[in-house]
Image (cartoon, rainbow over all chains, first blue to last red):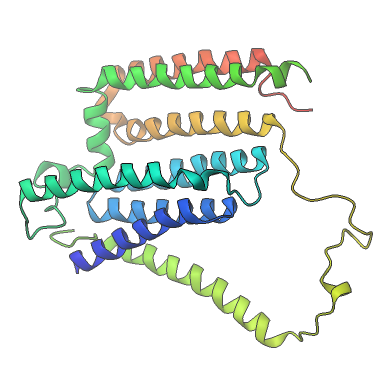
Length: 169
Length: 123
């Protein structure tokens, strides 16, 4: 059952990822990206990472996808053929990554457990989100505060990039 | 939870998803079966409240939409960090409050900057 679920989710993720790159209509690409995000969230749920699954849907399916849609509308692309001649480079990189994955799989060996066993003891008692909060605000405090700085940089960068448009109204 | 790959609590959510998909598919299907279909060219042309079309609907969007979407993503991520803090608020105590205060304080600088630069204005 667990393996069946994994293969369903992984299969849909691979298929929709191919469709994102392969479809000619950018709006269809964005829609298949949406399906992919939801299936990645399903994968997270099956790995007992529920908080991550919620974040996947809220941030990726909710916000990042809107950003992509705006980019598609901003550039006003209808049927985009411009990027399809990059196929050789893409194929080369794809083969390289595939080789790497195969080599890694051979080195690690085959294991029966596709889905890792659920977390033990403490974690399952205090819930997923609480555990994340606990470690985020004690052990990983500095990365957390740095994250806010990175967000600040992103915000200011976006405003500066579009400043011309804002200032010359 | 136990050893199940998917916690059993998620079955209602799966049920909801199935209902959503089924509702869309069934209502479209019933519509296509029930409605008469006699298309001719004049009927198939798009129209705007009876007046003929004057331009393509697909025009380039102003940059402003992109800025708003970008700011939305950033504050969305801020909310994601806020969530585990709110859940574990009692255990984290005063220290957690101060940490979150610093986090939001840094982002408030960005908010102030966006406000000052007029990125939030719309006309």
